[in-house]
Amino acid sequence: MSDPVRAQRRGHVLEVTLDRPPANAIDAATSIRMGEVFCDFRDDDDLRVAILASAGDRIFSAGWDLKAAAGGEHERMDYGPGGFGGITELWDLTKPVIAAVNGLAVGGGCEIMLAADLIVASEGAEFRFPETRLGNVPDAGGVQRLPRRLPRNVAMEMLLTGRRMGAAEAHERGLVNWVVPSEQVLPRAREVAGDLARNAPLSMQAIKQVVRGIEGLSMRDAFEAVQEGRFPAYERMLASEDHAEGPRAFTEKREPNFKGR
Image 1: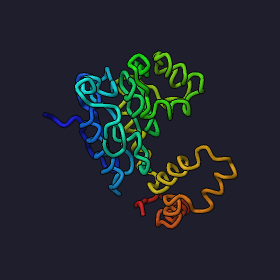
Image 2 (image 1 turned 60 degrees about the vertical axis):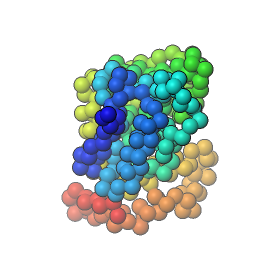
Image 3 (image 1 turned 120 degrees about the vertical axis):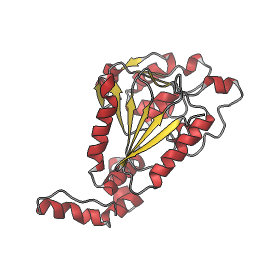
């Protein structure tokens, strides 16, 4: 049996491709494998950005494998490191992840997409949470993340009714960053990843850790959390060689050579 998760390095970028036909649905074994891949990405200092894509252009992911569930897999089982899809609960992943969404993202497919930091979607992409028609709850990020990404009433409409949101509306409402023709989804994600990979990696990691850590705090408490040294990635960035390299390169009118240390 072929590996349902392919990982390919492109310089400082890791491309993770979910390839489990016909619908790229995620069972326990696939979820565990995805978690292993994203943990390796987290721990590899040479990798700076990841792209999460899927094979085909019709279905990004149908989410939880209902056939596997009917065969005995249950909701409360261990989906491995990082939770469902290997990324929805990987709290110590501070490197940026780009979701390249081609086609339908349904239920858990939407949830792994929402765990990414940036989203490139095809013009024909659609997003849907059908769990209320399945006697379930989208608790791998749907109920947690969607109301923070959309107006609450719109998020509740999607969660309760299961209605589909098209790519144009998702872009208009800020759910996705870019909408491009289907054949341009992966090239656009690679372009964005390439731009990010030229940034100071420790700066990006600090931003992600701080943004996640101050969510829900008042403005004053958010400032104090940073100033009091609560974020290791931020402190590491301040003490790094790269922190000095950026201004030096600017004054010397050259491209910075960031090393992630």
